[in-house]
Length: 371
Length: 98
Image (cartoon, rainbow over the protein chains, first blue to last red):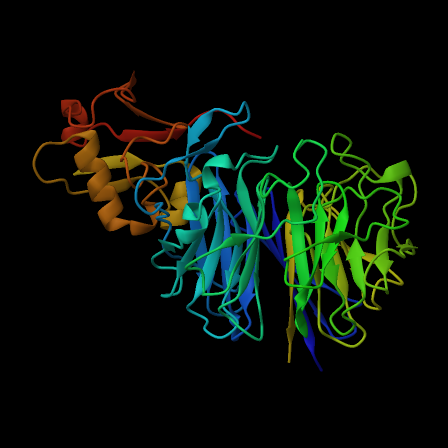
């Protein structure tokens, strides 16, 4: 029978939750790296026992941990992230030039084909790649260097590169997203990049055709249709049917279109999930009701999923990397909250249960479907 | 033999239970002690000093013989008691954060 492994990063350590294919009973292992901020953990699609984890702290900086046994043991690997050449400047919050400074790794994306190749999205925004299992890192400097970099400005959470999507049918094509610069695409394995933000509208940007400056919170795709992208922006849920060349809004009947994560059902490319949050200053669900919204039509028409989720006095947030889907049938959907709960649905969102209730604030959730 | 006291999280990272004892060749300074520490425990690289600038991370301090040595130049000799091993060199995390 298949197994499922959840990799949960929190403000004070990492946890690994395991279950069989029924996904009813869960074992919780952790905390790993107790006391450290674990922004993200992810397993290699090419070798599910190869895991990578971003470990950081305000005192001791950034570390990268690697496991070759599914998270039972870990070893620190390379943590030297040096920008290529003269780093230059981006914009600071007040619009003045500010030098690029490495702060932390937000997201780790292992190659679909090679367990030793992995990408890291960092703050201040840049993309790094390792081809030796995380021992050494080299910046893909074409992203910061393509021209718009000096105009990028941090969002409230920092100038972070938080999303990395690799086209499963063409690994030379990748999509990344930066708060608050926008989305970008490469078609040559990271050598050159272009902004892909046409159609995004952001109230804080006076120019409706602005090439960059959009606060993209998350992008997702279905592996069978890598040209179709879904985006949760600061405000607005968006969709592109041309690999990001143009976007249209699909917020439809959502109670609010602010939020952080967005994900796609493993077997239904038009079924997508978001967690509406009241506003950019009120980072909690509307009306104190924690509701996942599902669209089976690729957007615009949404239904609230509430069964098993708290429907009163709930004021947690769900962060951008804290939702994931497994590939079992029926598709499992998972998300973690800033209140330390991890919720799981084994039936595509119809019913939910808390599989962990009292963890530190959850920063990220990834899932591995294992044979 | 130089004795170094690490913060708890760095002891865990380096997989040591207590004080670290190091052989340091030549002058005993902050730089030579930290070089020897990182040579023996490579996983500590970047956690005490910036990997590029070699500057002390802002939320760490260096103490020895009841003195705050955090702002001393890195090549200033450490007190004789540290060099002789009778007093440890403390690396301390700031009382900050949550």
